[in-house]
Amino acid sequence: MAIVFSSITLLSAQNKATPPEEKPLVALVGGTLIDGTGKEPVANTVILIEGDKIKEVGLVGKVKIPKDAQKIDASGKWILPGFIDCHIHLSSETSDLEYYRDSNSLATLRALQLMNTYLRCGVTAVRDVGSHVEAMQALLRAQRNGYIDSIRLYPCGNLITITGGHGYGMHGSMAVDGPWEWRKAVRQMYAAGFKYIKISPQFTLEEARAAVEEARMLGLHITAHGGGFSDTIPTTMTRIAVEAGVECIEHWNEMTDDVLDLMAERGVFDVPTLYTYYASYQRDDISRFLIEKRGWSMAMHETLFKKAYQRKIVMGIGTDANGEYRELYPQIYFEEMKYFQRLGMSPMEVIVCATKNGARILGLEDELGTIEAGKAADLQILKGDPLKSFDNLGSPETVILRGKIYRFKENI
Image 1 (cartoon, rainbow, N blue to C red):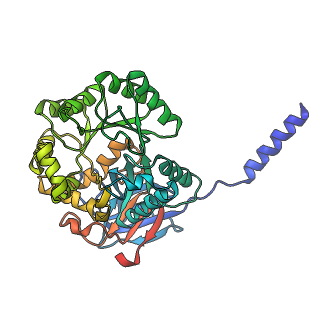
Image 2 (cartoon, rainbow, N blue to C red):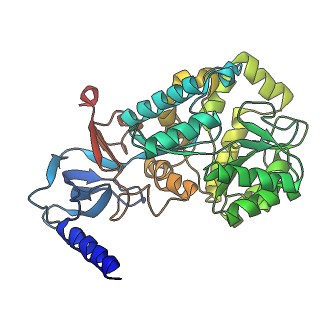
Image 3 (cartoon, one colour):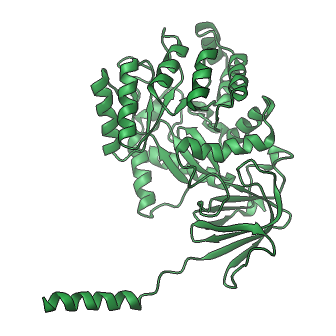
């Protein structure tokens, strides 16, 4: 008994002798703050960062800046939260699906390259909705172990679909049939370490409900591809997904007003991916398929966006530029923002879509998306006013991610 007591005493003494690790302090001084909440910009601000968190936000002269804080002069500049891409395929490269046969090592490197490109542009978090599963697992583990230093990654696991459904046979998809198999598939994704689930048509209401119930029980977030490439009417699939209880729908595909009403009533999010559709309609082969086989048009996607906006459905920015559209990165993110503005949103509303709404779609609104005390220190400092022109986006002078400062000479 005395030996145990001595061990405890020694341990206690060691703890008292070890001071807590000091977190670095950074103060952004004098900038105009656009905090991501939708509030009006505030000039001459101080943002105090401690470690990887925002400690305090206020006006110059009102916030006490510690003597040992690193000061960054943001006078004449604009400070925004880091942006979030809610729909991306990081390891995608070619439209003929050749990339699915690539080694996992090559897929991982390709994904990391795009993540680092995004960092330089002020996009600090992404939700990957379909890539090489092993590549996503490797990147997550590499981040946890400190092997790589890049943006926040929130990947879905395998795309869950039915035999013959949308995505069937693609590397990274999982074909399952019947409610219990769908439930098991969600459990497998949970066991593999994924916190996000994506389901794809065509599914029955019973299958979708099983997936949603299991996801909720395990604390996972679940989204559904809107529509699908078969004779099944896309609006039917979207209605089933919404009735089953998914949190989000990907894309604005063929949809009736009653489904939009149901989404608004239940608070279901959407990620429109408008610009990728726009790029698709510029290509003869794809536009012919979409127009002749599906009866779609760009006007249809735009009309659905406007109807959703009227219903106050929360929308986020997503790019979905896989295949040959990979060459559109990173500018496609900002083209998507411009598209939202062209269809009726104010610049401030679009910025909220890129920040606060993105965090809501990820289920991380208490951690990311806005510049407020207690939130993650993910910010960007711009030379030009984004509310005057979105052309001022994409080349931040400074990006702060997890409290770490990145300065890009080409943007200064």
